[in-house]
Length: 75
Image (cartoon, rainbow, N blue to C red; front, top):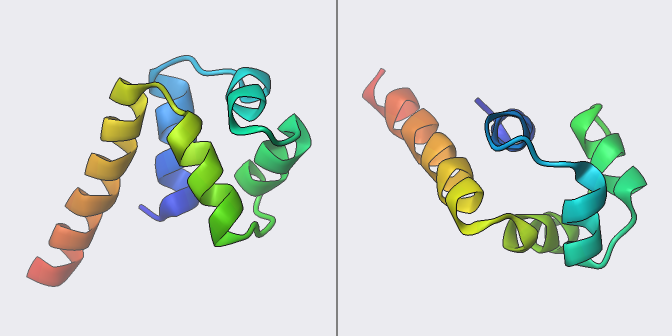
């Protein structure tokens, strides 16, 4: 799972709306939509999105990335 997939899964599991997260992040919803559909974003923008996630969604996102990295390293 890559960053985009982890974010997408977090949005789905926690039933998050791009417009709500974007508002909290201070960015436009289109930026989140473009990233979710394969376009690149800056690390700064990604950080804003992650920081705007509710705490449980943020923990889920980080856990998904850590587990993916551990699985990759174990192989």
